[in-house]
Length: 539
Image (cartoon, rainbow, N blue to C red):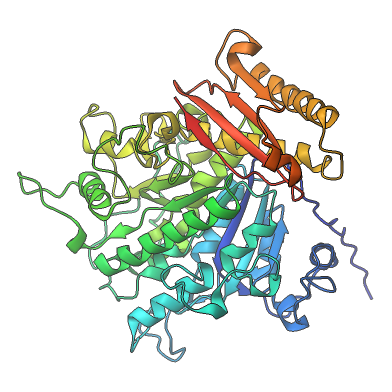
């Protein structure tokens, strides 16, 4: 008889001031025959999912279906979810591919997130992964069902059964859980591109040799080359025009939901790989992947064809969306088709690590990210960085977070949002505003039951001024003095008599982000729910 002692992990409490928590929404299987750990059960009970106002059936609790699970390590995720068990064929008896299973894109993204420096994540499992290669009688219907599990109203808002009711958690599905996750700052849907791809592509027959990172090693005898993995011949998901349309609708729906309910959360998404019908051929007969992708994004309306005047677009619709490109071939991705992983998980890890080490308002592009990308061997397609500002890569990098190879290794070359306004294009500015909103909201929580009068106004004003002074000391704001960096108003000039009669407290914060030439004004409307109602930008 032997005894095995295992240290029980404590429940993870929410921290509203963190700026590095990522939420992953997607398809992954629950690991069978593994009981729910006490720490996870306590976490769900504290959130009201077991015996509270959000109580779910015991079967859903055990399967962690459609429940937000907080994890702080890759080991905890691996213990709960069978992320590596995605069937390759709809029929288990069909073994023509010679492969048993492959990894899920959600699992690969969570793995990259923790490998690049992430420390806390929330996983919302919406269902089991579908077979990688399957025969579909109705591909469009399959695509809609997969997307609706993650984004219930991505294309059809008429179905009353799928409508989001904030006061009824039983109606929450997929991204709806973000409404109750106030400490989340990043949201990802790692298998979004795969859900939009329902056409089976032909396997790759001619493969280049696996790329190996450049470096010096000790002299040794020549080892035999590794056996070729069949997964390198299984094609990664590539979208046709219909697939890109579904991806665009889902992206817009997520962005609209965040704008209404969680304004400060940043959406990180991988730009899907295209099928040939979405590319164009240049005048010299060569297909330039980056130029083709930029032209296609402009054609479908994701990226504006030219900058929009500031009086027509304040950047609010897309300043909290970042796209990552290209797909990365890493050593850990050997369990994925073509050994390619979507870059959104990598980007989320860099953003989270940057927020922890240097502040959320600083760029994560450049040399800082190089040590965390040493395992990147190649990319699809491979960018040709350094050919000038007019090169296709440089033009795409103005709108998309682009990974490219430098002389000393791979690095993130641009940290940008999809905003057409220059003041909001820098990713650090949007993350700074999100951090300010979360911090100001946390400061307002203690005032919910206070009298709405001059004493409360003065106390809130001093609390926010102390908060902004700390950001200014860290270099988040431009300006030689505090008066140049920010201003806080909370008095009769920020509230009408109707606001006072309704119990609303409005504080106006004006800041000058260090990376922006614009002055950005944040208007917080703190009511009994202590929520931020409006965010606007002023020249």
